[in-house]
Every structure is written in C-alpha cells, then in structure tokens.
Image 1 (spheres, helix red, strand yellow):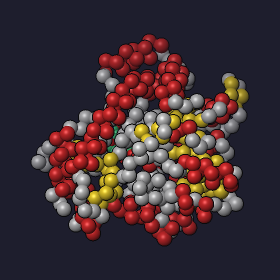
Image 2: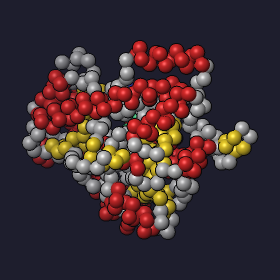
Image 3: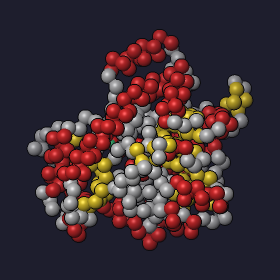
Image 4: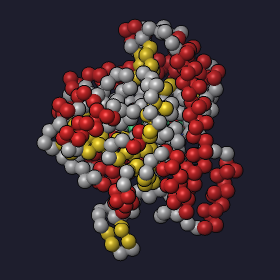
Length: 372
Ligand code: T4K
C-alpha cells in the first residue's frame, strides 16, 4: 500500500495541451509577453462577464491583489480580520503597515463571526477584511450594515470563491472590493494569478495605475504603485480555463458528495454546513474531527493518511494569530478566539480535484472509518 502513487490535497486542472499550445504559438509570434497585451485584454473582459461582475483588474497573484486593494482604498490604522485563513490575508495588512485586529469565527462555515465584529471596532478602524473561507460566503448583509454604520470599508478576500453565487448573484458584487486568487491550487487557475473586482470605472482605473508602478500615462506617475501585472501566458490559460469551469465544479461536487456519503453518521466527524442559496465551487473538502468522540485526534488521522501516501492538509492550522509576527497582538489572545482555536485543531482538508478517482475517495474514507 505504501508504494501506491501519492494523492495530494489538490492537483491543478489544465485544459488539453493542444488548445493551450495554439495560444502559446500566438504569443511567440506576436512577441507581446506582458503589459496589457491582447490575451490580457480579452481575459479581463471575458472573466468579468463570466463571473457576472462589472470590473476586473488582473494580477500576477492574489497576494499582490490584496495588498493593492488596501492601497486602492487608502486603508490605514486598524483592520478587522479573521485568524482562520491563509497567512497572506494578514500579511497584506502588514505590508501596508496596518494593524490586524482578529475576530473569532463561527463554526458552521468557518468565516468571521459577524456578531463579534462590532465589539472590535475602535476609532482607528478603517475597514473589515473578511475571507469567504473554502468558498462559502460570509454573512455579507450583516457585515455591510456594520460597515455602513461606522463608515468603514469592506474588502473581501475571495481567494477561494471563484464562481460562487448567492441567490444567483456573484459574491464578488458585495463589499467595496473583492480579491481572487488563480493560484495552481485553486479551483480556477492561471498557473499563478489573481484579480481585484470593483464596481466603478474610476476605482478600476486607480487599481490599474497601482498595479503598473503608478503610471497613468507614459510620463506621469500618480502613486507609488507596484509591479503586479498578469502576463500573457497566464491570461491565455485563463481564457481556456473558463470553458471548463462548470464541468470542473460538477466533478468536484460528485467527489464531495461521495465523501459525505461514506463518512456520514460517524461520531466525532463533522462537515461544513450547506447553504441552499449558494452555488459553491467545492474548492476544499474539510472535515472536523473531535478527538473525544472519534477516538483519535485530527493529527493522528493526518499522519495515518500520510503513511498511506495520502497528503491531506490542515488548512488553516496554525491560526495566523499564532505566528511569531502576529502572536503579540492583543487580539491574538486565545481567549478572544476560542472557536478558531478549536476549529484549527479539528480541521482536515481531504483531497479533492477532478482527476481523483472514486476508488481513491473510497480508500481514503475506509482508512478514516477504520479508526473509529
Ligand atoms: N487569501 C487566501 C484565503 C488564500 O488561501 C490565498 C492562497 C491567498 C489569499 C493568496 O493568494 P496567492 O498569492 O497564492 O494567489 C497553497 C497556495 O500556495 C496558496 O495559493 C493558497 N492560498 C493556500 C491555501 O495553499 P501551500 O503551501 O499549501 O501549497 P503547496 O505548494 O503545498 O500545494 C498543495 C498541494 O497542491 C501539493 O501538495 C500538490 C499540489 N500542487 C501544488 C502546486 C503548486 C500541484 O499538484 N501542482 C502545483 O503546481 O499553499
């Protein structure tokens, strides 16, 4: 069993190579490799239409999109955010010399607990930076209400939420800005890549200046911008990927349902809640293992799978608030984050990607079930 091929938590979906090679040939012939080329212009428009949003600005990755989103709205002081995310969420604040203020999460979807945000607001708070964790939407109405009352901005880290809709509307239409990641490990990838979604042309223009060193024309620099442009190879891949997205989600859903079926009614194993108003993208398949009722801990299950060449991941453990850079913050105190602490110790993301066979899913489930 130990020589079986490794099964990773994810594998990128790629279109047939022949399709992409046609685009590669064009890029080679044009010798236009980056800086708002033909593929970039097309992808930017097509992805906005596909997602049902007004404006998209493409980025070379999600982290630079996040850093630039904060710059776009001139966010300073303190920002309320979640400790249960990939570390890039909080790093984006650090890069803007903004103080992160962590608020606990709710257990159903693992998103920031909207009921706890208000108590964390101070005169220095200028924005809320929630994450649609695993692609499940935050309580956006409640969050917007708070933002409106206090006159602060909302930037959604929607790195996991490509294509996710709630009541048939893209989650990206909420808040002031949202950012996406098109990293290789994401449900929609352009090798690396990312985007900012905004709702008006003026904001898009500012974002586009900021991602191109701050240039507004050949000789004018309006802000200390950065280089975060998406190149033609990434954009060309994105165009091909769009065609396959819904099929990719359909296959991922089949795998998710299989896991739910084969791991159901086991004491000590819990799934994420499901929201019938949401079209989700099944970007991750987390389970939550309660050692007391299940018998062994999450880490023991993780190690057992690893021994069998199955590489599940503990997204998001450790909490961001535990890293040395952030653990000294008052809001990192464990008493402030009891649910995040518990979930961080219970979560295990199981492999999910289009090429994962049903036999492999069954083998993973069997290994887990046998521990109970
Ligand atoms: N906000 C949130 C909420 C995020 O989750 C992320 C990124 C960001 C912001 C920042 O967006 P980007 O700047 O990344 O666009 C991965 C990704 O690197 C990261 O993009 C992602 N979140 C995070 C949740 O996961 P690792 O360190 O776990 O990746 P890695 O290299 O261990 O890959 C996991 C598995 O995927 C591998 O075991 C095998 C497979 N894999 C990976 C790559 C890169 C492949 O099969 N092929 C590949 O090319 O961070």
